[in-house]
Length: 75
Image 1 (cartoon, helix red, strand yellow):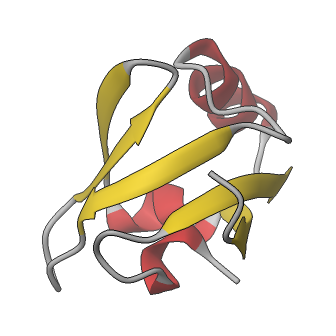
Image 2 (tube, helix red, strand yellow):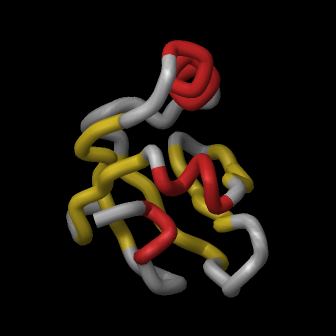
């Protein structure tokens, strides 16, 4: 499932990153790598998704979330 499909207060693990080299480089540089655990803090429609991972709060836009495959649970 895509990161943007997760509900607020749910936990997940990054399963796969899909996108061009620039996207992969940006996402991995902020710490979201396959196997990384995260917690969805806020997920309102038409707003960035706010996630907490590796002791950092990260805001991701909807396009970025479309390139991040996650497995629900586990964090």
